[in-house]
Length: 383
Image 1 (cartoon, rainbow, N blue to C red):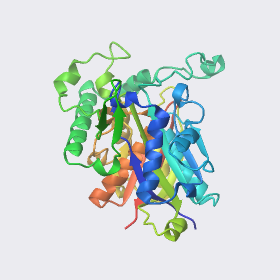
Image 2: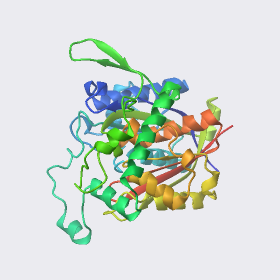
Image 3: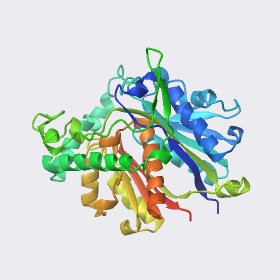
Image 4: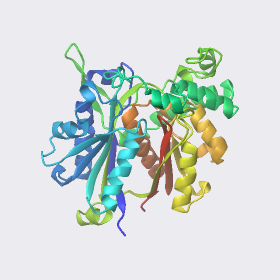
C-alpha cells in the first residue's frame, strides 16, 4: 500500500495587518516558501510534479492561478505545473489533502501543497463584492456574517464573555512563550522586506502576538457584530499576511532519493455542516477522522483547531472532551494571525514541529470553513 509522507515544510512569519509583509506582493511571498522547501530538502525543483496552492481571495495580485505564477517566480522549471484552490479558511489544508490523494492514487510521487494570503494587499471579500448572494440560496438558508454565527455558537454552547476572553489571553501568552523559547525558528524562513524608502529589513518572527495584552484590555473591547454580544476584535482571529509550503512524497520516492520522511499523512476527511451556524463542522470532522483512523481522542498528542473565533475551539472542547492542554499549545490564530489561504498549511507546520519537539506520535488538525465545512487531518510522526 502506498503512503503519502511529509518530507519538509516551511512557512513565512505571519505579518499583522498593514505590517511589514504589506510591502511584498503575494505571488512573490508565496515563491519564497516554494523555493525554500525544495532547498531544505536538497532536491531539484524539476522533480516536483505539481504545486497545489490554497488561496481564498483570488483577485488582484492573487488572481490568475497564483499557484502556477508563484512556482515560476520561484525559479521552478516551466515544466512544473501549479493550481490554486478555494475551500475558504481550509484552503491550505485542502491542498495537503489533494496532494496526498494524488500520491496515494499513484498519479504522482512528489507534490508541494502550499497556501498564501496577503490580506493587507488583497482585502478579504474583494473577489465577490460585486456578486449579490443568490436569492435561491437565501430561500433555503439564512445567510449571515461569520461574526453573527460566532455569536450564535457562543449562545448555543453557553459560553461566557469571560471564557472567550480568557481563551484569547491564553492564546497570546502561549504564542509569546513559544517565541521566547525559539519554538518557531525552525519552521520559519526569514523574509527580507524592501520598504518604500528603499531601505531593507528582515522579518524573522510572527508579528501578531501581543505581550502587552491583558484580560482587562480584552474585557474593555466593544462587541463587533452584535452590540449585546460577546464577539469582538480581541477574541477573533487577526487579519494577516503569510505563506507556507509542505513537500509531500510517496514513501518509495523519498527512500529512492535518500530522504528521511518526517510524517505519514494517516487520515484525511472533509465534512459539510449547517451553513448558517457555519463554524461548527470541526466537531463532526473530528469524530469522522478519529473513527476512520481507528484512534480515540486520547490517542492524539497535539490538536490544532483554528481559532477563527475563540468560541470555535471552546465549543469543540466541550463536544469532544479533548485534553485542553494539548490544544494549540503554541497559541493560535487569535495571537499568531489567520492569513486565510495559508492558515491550513501554517497549522500543519506548527503541529509537525510541536510533535517533534515533544516526541509526540499523532497530531490532529481541523478548521472551520465558510459556508459550513471543515477538513480534518491526522498525521503520524515517523521515528
